[in-house]
Amino acid sequence: MTSRTDEALGYEQARDELIEVVRRLEAGGTTLEESLALWERGEELAKVCRRWLEGARARLDAALAEEEDGEGGGSPSGDA
Image (cartoon, rainbow, N blue to C red; front, side, top):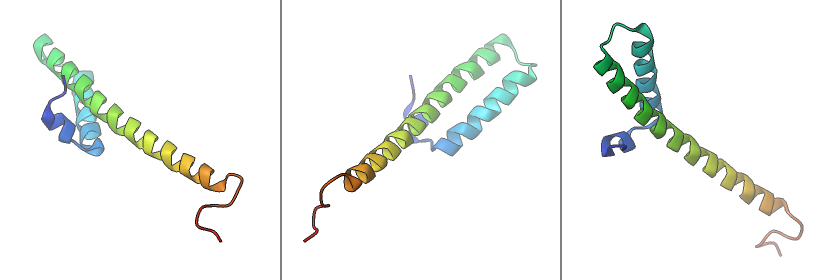
């Protein structure tokens, strides 16, 4: 479950922390318990990043759809 603190993280913050988690896991030298905690944290951070990216994609899609609607056949509203 994602905490409220995670939800307040910006994309760049979550991404940077995720990179650090992956680096620590790849470096090894942690106990099984520490590795599991890092993995769980990484999963939560990945969810935060995914939500940010999905939100950005939705905004881009909406902007592109508005642009296409404005270029469609017929006069744009407001033209005399």
